[in-house]
Image 1: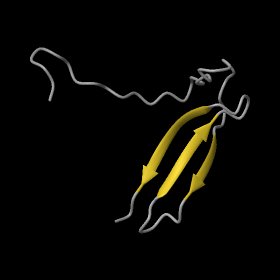
Image 2 (image 1 turned 135 degrees about the vertical axis):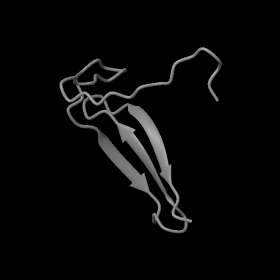
Image 3 (image 1 turned 90 degrees about the horizontal axis):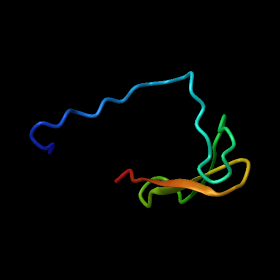
Image 4 (image 1 turned 90 degrees about the vertical axis):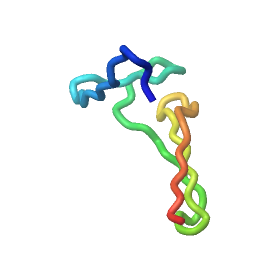
Length: 65
């Protein structure tokens, strides 16, 4: 829930801006992903990392059931 008087968060799609790695400060035109798990009943865990310095940028989980 939002607090009274606060405005909603607007998400803006920007194709003219290139993000940078928070670790090595290089531009990220691509991000590497490594997945583990079958991706159905057990689900799939994915790790995203920088192609320049190989440091982890984040994780995601997908669960089908």
